[in-house]
Image (cartoon, rainbow, N blue to C red; front, side, top):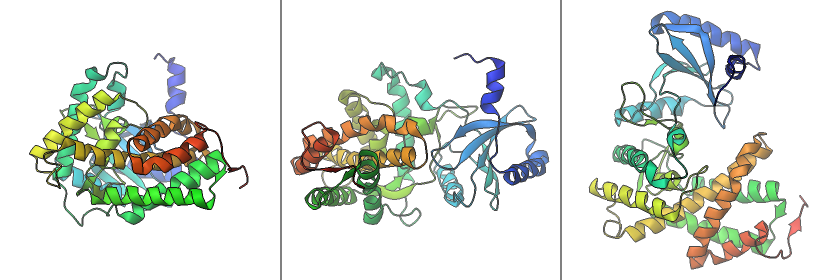
Amino acid sequence: MSHSTHSTTVDFQVTWADPIRQAACAAWLSERANDQGLLPHSLRIASADASFRRYLRVDTAQGESRIVMDAPPDKENSEPFVRIAALMKSAGLNAPEVLDWHEAHGFMLLTDLGDATMMSAIDAERPQANHGLYMQAVDTLVQWQLASRPGVLPPYDAALLNRELSLFPDWYLAQHRGVQLQSAQREVFDKAFALIVQRNLAAPSVYVHRDFMPRNLMMPHGSSAQLGVLDFQDAVYGPISYDIASLMRDAFLTWDEDFVLDITIRYWEKARKAGLMDFEDWHSDFGAFYRAVEWMGLQRHLKVAGIFARLTLRDGKPKYLADAPRFIHYIRSTCDRYRELGPLLKLIDEIEGTTPQVGFAYGRM
C-alpha cells in the first residue's frame, strides 16, 4: 500500500478536540522527555480504540519508540489497564510496560510492541498457513490462564453475563432492527439467556482477557520472541471456555470448522497437560469441552452483535455493523446444534428475514 509522503503526514497528524488537553499533553511530554529520552516533536497517531482511548507513538533519542495512551479520565478509567499490565508481566507475558502515568490527565507512557498485529500476518485464504501463529496464541493463552488466582480480577458473574446479553435485544433488535419484542417473544429470549448463563457459569474459572483475538495480539517485535498482548483492560475471572472461543470465532475473520476444531483441540491438549481441564469429564472428553466453548461463543456473539449496533448507532462508527452478519451466522449455527435453543433460532430467523415474518411490531419505538 503506497502513500505519497504528503498523505502520510496528514494521516498521522495528531488533532485535538480540546486545546487545554493538547497543552497538558505537551507539558507532560516535555517534563518526561529527559528521563525517558523522548523526542516530543515526533508525536503521531498510532491507533484508535473502539472506546474513547487512543494511542500515539513518540520516538526516543535511542532510535526506539514509545506509546502514549490518551484516555480522558472523565471517559475512561485507566486504573485496570495499569493493574492488569502488571499482572500480565508477572505471568511472563509480553504486555506493554507502564513507564509513566499522569493519572489526573489520563496520559500514559508505555513500551511499544510495534505496529504489526497478528491479524496483519494472517493469510485468510489458507488456514493451515497460519497454524504456527495460532499455536503461539494458544501458548500465550495457556500461560495467562496458568497464572490465575481467585479474588484478583472482577468476577465474570451472572450479573455481568446477563448485562452483556441484554445488549442484543436492546441495541441489535430494538435500535438496529427496529423490533419490539412481544411478551411471548421476550420469554423465548429470557429462557435462552438463562440457559446460556447457567451453562457458562458451570465452567471452571480462570483469568479471561475478554477480547483475545488476532487484532489484539502483536507480532514478536524487538528482542521478544513472544506474541504481544494488548487491549486487556476489561479482563475478568471467569469461564475458561471464553478466550479460546473469541480466538477461533473471530469478530473480523471466519475460519472453516476444520481449522477451528484443529486449533481448539490443540489448545485443549495443552490446557489438559497444564492441569486446566480437571472438571467433570473435560479431561478425557474433548466433545464435552467443545460444547462448553460453543455455549460460551454464543454468549459472546449475542453481546458483540449488540455492541456493534451500539458503536454504529450511538458512537457513529458504521464500519462495525458491517461485520454483524458473521455473528448472526455464528449464533444461528450454534442454536441449530442444540435442541434447547430451537425456539431462539426460530425467533432470530423470523427477525432476520430468513423465514417469513409473523406478528412483529416494526418501527414502533
